[in-house]
Image (cartoon, rainbow, N blue to C red; front, side, top):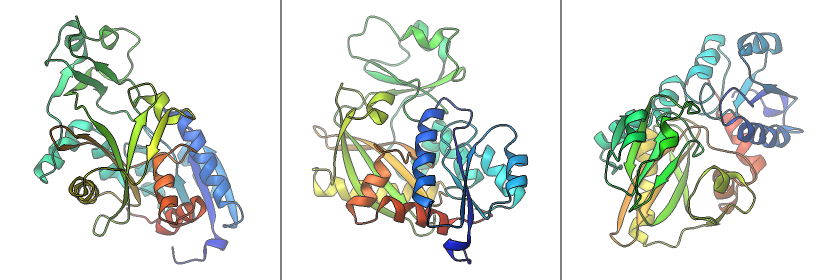
Length: 312
């Protein structure tokens, strides 16, 4: 941004329409609180279908997008901001849409030379009827984040996860089924433009109850974070390098977070997904990594606002 931060009116988008609404409200509150006193005015916007009109009336100088999940993270809100020509944070329309689609993300990353899991997309009713691949495997929605709707089918399971075929399932008729990769859960935050991204560090995540699900990610004490991760140096460097490569290949901007599994028995690192709207909650990984390197939460949020632009 060309104007001083202290002169800006910043609208923080939070809440939204997705299954990740509560996480987004927490992220948005943290970002808005961090901006108070740093900018001229902060408007906290619980984003709904009338978002275009709300922003037209507010006339903010910058939008900080703290939405997560469908509609807020998949290119839809980014398209509204592009249409209104308001500078905004994080990735643009194309990168947001691509990374929200796990299958398309895997295709691009595989072409870029990044190791990704096997498996593929399957009809959810077929997945509920039979094992479409050999257990152990993971079932996940193709276009959700925060481990919403994720199931682990363990080795020796008598049958598939029948909940995926129920009428209560609301995450689309096609689901991603991938082989379960044992070992460590790793995450890397990346900041910067697609042409010059910088990976921060590697976090080793140990969920308290055995699987890194929604509760493990966001409940206080749900997981233990070790940073920097105590892994072999060549794996550490590979995680940093592949996170930057993924950020660039997908055209991400601003802040992203890349998630990996590392099989420490077979010494195999596999990239699971890239998140273009990573959490900014009290238990989130990105602000924790930034703080480890000397960048406070307030500094990180300020950088995000200063990095905002349109088009993205």
